[in-house]
Length: 146
Image 1 (tube, rainbow, N blue to C red):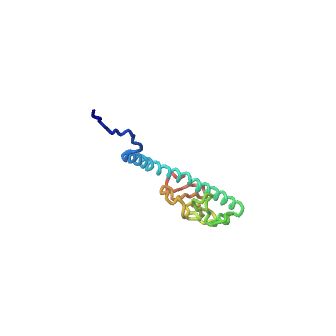
Image 2: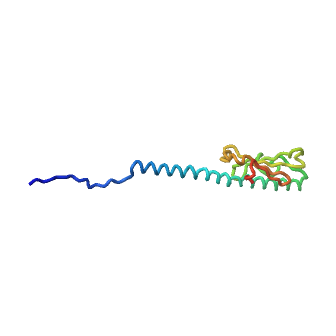
Image 3: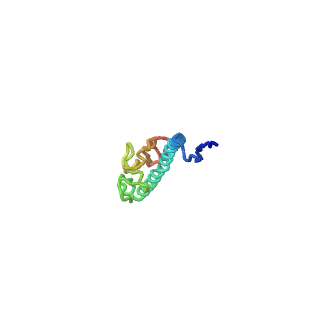
């Protein structure tokens, strides 16, 4: 009697194939390439509030100074701030005052907020600077900023 001996592989393969792994990596890469710019834009927009708040607060102090001393100032320390130029509350912008075009600082001012050195807002190409003048007129590098 002859016995037939057949070896059968009864072990199951577990794990991922290289192809499956590559597909997952490609899908994750596509999701990141779409989500990351959207996230960065949302962060830029959120940080712009820091500039707006700083400008509004400095404008209020300028008007208070006008009521007290009948003049505006280009020096932020005259408004009670520790630094000139003013560093915004969250530190993303610096805010400075200057005389308006065609006038003197005694009669009109323009406050300008620009991204601070080392701030991630330096990469915000849409809104490079914000301005607020003594009339309350708001300007920026893009209409979408304010």
